[in-house]
Length: 118
Image 1 (cartoon, rainbow, N blue to C red):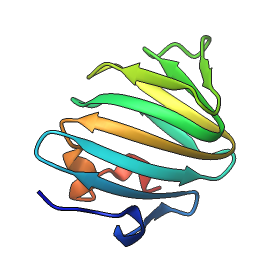
Image 2 (tube, rainbow, N blue to C red):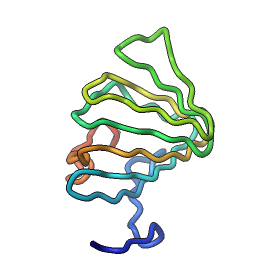
Image 3 (cartoon, rainbow, N blue to C red):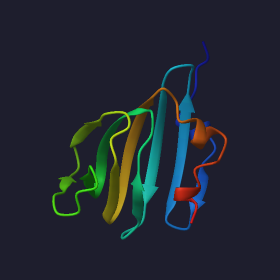
Image 4 (cartoon, one colour):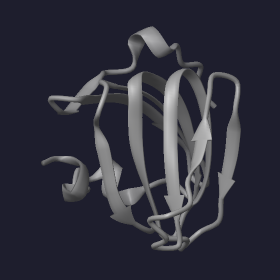
């Protein structure tokens, strides 16, 4: 067991519009992220179950390759996304949010998450 403090966790500038910090263990990862207005996360899916909670701004999600229906998450809103469910997102306003993943995102740990680094 190790005590951690978010202020001591290195912040990664993933791209000009996204920065994040994350902590992970053997079976769980939590990430604190900040995005600027207009940043779009392209369609993707992953083997990890995801829980997203929004603190500031609006985070718009689309699911299952359906471009017509979306869900807006406002401050205080949370959503659970099943593993392997296709989704994409758009930041409306500057967004601050937390994502929790089980198991940890190996592509984030080893920086092979190229779909975010463009």
